Image (cartoon, rainbow, N blue to C red; front, top):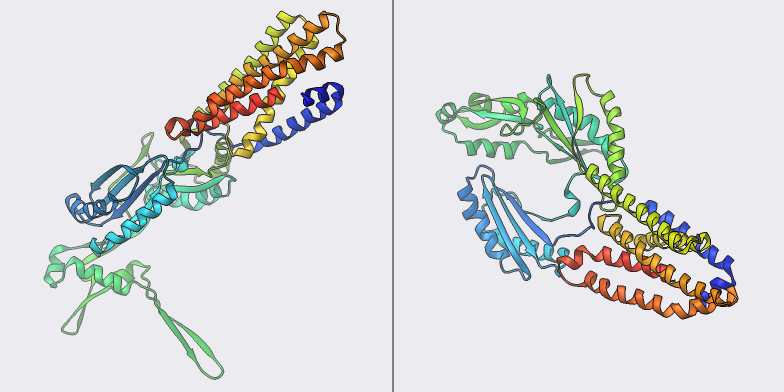
Length: 474
């Protein structure tokens, strides 16, 4: 009631405070990230292991089963799924919503470390990763051409596009989905057997000879020379001269049992776009970056990328999540504006006084824009749920204004002085307005803080609605 008396007796202070709230809210609005739904980190941890050359049955018995035996003892696991395919094992663990995902990932790493002694020596180290809501790409670009191969397209995209896209503000990672150049060693089984060798001998020779090792330096009193041994194999001829064994003083080299070529690292997959060879470039954003800004910056950079590519290489947008988000947010914005206009018109029709209509007309933007500042402070984002909360709060904001105005006008019509009617009319209705706000908070805020998927999903919804209505009551 002291606040209402101050606002009536000192209107300049009230106007200045409203302007401050609106200014801070507008500045905060520019920094709010835009996304489809609230940022909810699912407590899911996955363990991926590669075992090159192993069949699915071998992967299951020698990798998946030992890991599952250790991981099943972790506390708080709700569901464990495993997938054993050729050369790859993947185990996914879903924890309870009250479990911290970082602590769960640490427990998984600890259990995986205990199981390493039971895994084959040739297995790549298991990779433990947390599920991230921002792992989905914002936009996927397709580099396609009727003339260039996928290897050539991948090289062009990597040299011209990837580095440029990584400089865009808000981009966390740019992934190239396509084949890469690799040295391919094709073994002739008959020639290899004739030399009394096996594929394992070729692998061992590669591991032993394709390395860079520290070689020290040569020192004298006046000079010092670093020594470097070129142990890394880079050219086709280097791999052809790879020594596999020695027979009666004769070195058996790889060119005696096979051939070497510079080719693709994977021949097991292919991709097309409109019937042409293509490679994809996935753009992922940072967790607090504005999705629409990142997508717009990527689209604005496409003409620059095209200018540096050959004429017969096209860059097309194969996948764009910003379209749906932009249209959804735009529809909610339009609904918010329409709701405000209809409410103001309704008030004018019933009260038939422009001065009375101006009160809720200014109360609506001050309350909603002020809520943006609190949303930024809490780390919220502009999404469908927070915007829905703002739409619902419009009616509640107007209800508070109408109740207050009706009581003040009733006292003025009874012959009371306008200033006195405003002060005591506001005092009379203050409890009703505050009680309505407290009841609303008591309904929605507990839902936001409950343990479960509903509470996690509607957390930002409930808090935003409570903030907007609280500002209106003040």
